[in-house]
Length: 51
Image 1: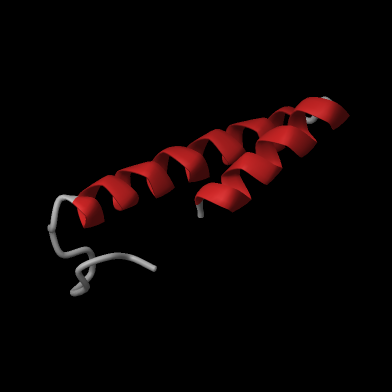
Image 2 (image 1 turned 135 degrees about the horizontal axis):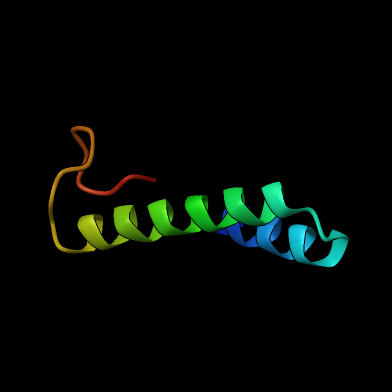
């Protein structure tokens, strides 16, 4: 999810498409939150890590 967010950020920035930029930021932030929760040992949707 983090990688997809970064890819969308880059594409949105280069093509100057605001919706891709926004979706990329949202996906990257959600991915980082899930990564942090998994690293701290909290279960994410019944798993120890989300990937």
